[in-house]
Amino acid sequence: MADTSGSNRAEVFGLSRRAVLGALGLVAVFILLGVGIAIGRGPVPELRETAREARTAEAAAVDRAETLESRLHGEEALTLLYRALLDVDARNFGIANDRVRTAAERLGAVDVARLGADPEELEAIRDELSTFDIRVAEDLAGQRSRLMTLAERLNRLLGEAR
Image 1 (cartoon, rainbow, N blue to C red):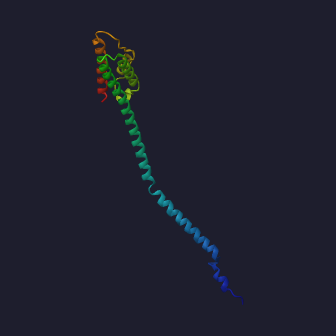
Image 2 (image 1 turned 45 degrees about the vertical axis):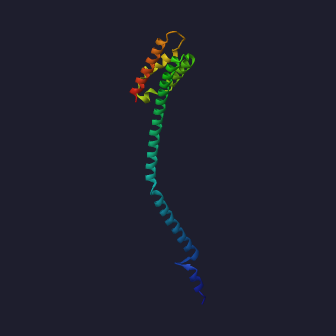
Image 3 (image 1 turned 45 degrees about the horizontal axis):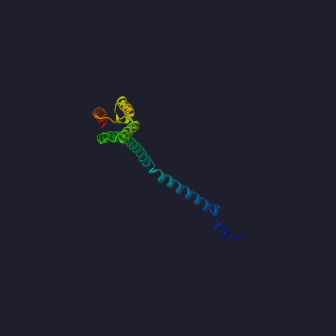
């Protein structure tokens, strides 16, 4: 009779020991894969919601920054007009004209839709500033008054948007 005890040790359930260990290893891999997928899917909806909220907050921040930048250009133009008035009083006509031109440029960068201001009024002020020319004269009251009126109109326009 042949010794079958050696062959019984090498077989489990009629399969070789290697086949059984391979099958057990494969089952373990599938179990670990399932556990990994289950764990990986857990926070994804929360992360997607967080990412969506972050995109919404970013869009709101960009919109607010653009609105503030537009307001800043308008306020800079107003400040330049008031400084031009001081320059007229000090008889610095060249500097006053430069400030008036720069104020007109700043108004060109104002997005009136963001500020909720009247676009026609802003354009009228800008056009008037771009053609405004302060000249040397004995009586500067007329030029000063016109410049002050423009500054007041701009201040009112920006005030409506505040």
